Length: 79
Image (cartoon, rainbow, N blue to C red):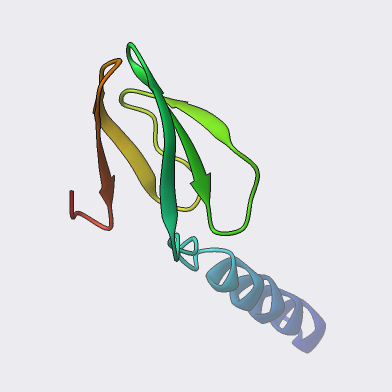
């Protein structure tokens, strides 16, 4: 293998490792409403969005259960 090919492979490897970085966890989550099987949440300073039971957001917020009265939310393994 020549030096150019080796260098190109090293660069690709470094870029691949960088893309494996974990997603950022939510810093704050506010529950603003509930529906059967959905929770309306604000993550960080974002806009309200509905998250279905079983769904996990890119920030790591997962809705475990939701009724019209309450919701159980998991963040980084903590409910």
